[in-house]
Image 1 (cartoon, rainbow, N blue to C red):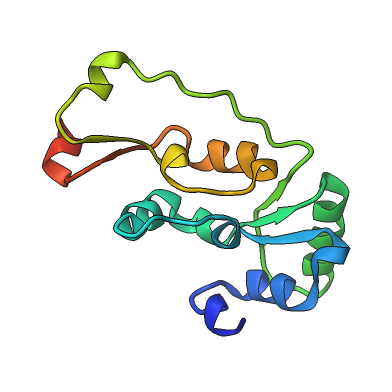
Image 2 (cartoon, helix red, strand yellow):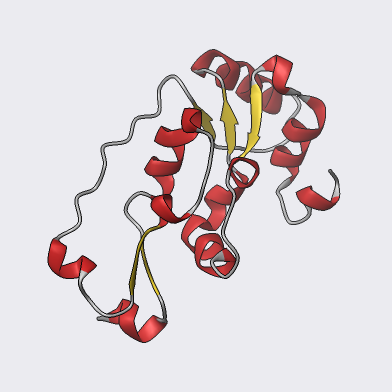
Length: 138
């Protein structure tokens, strides 16, 4: 697991190392996604810093963990409580879908368990993925 946490900030590492699923911690955003081969760089760029945000069962878990971080002066983490995160699907204009190089919305390209639909949609649901930068610029 330590290898998986390489590059994560101190607070994220602390939570993922010291709190397990039975405490309501479901994992980092990077843990809940499966990215198809060839899309790794695009999805990593689309996620940005959100790649190390933490998914939790509910807002009470997030509140408790924020208190732990504050009390121990460890740092900050963004939490995604499953019971409060909402996602309204983004409707893409058909003209965009027909453009050369359009591959889809990022949340449609990755795979994940259905319970994470709102979290993934919230982060990646407005990101259009194209086959190259020139087509993306158009």
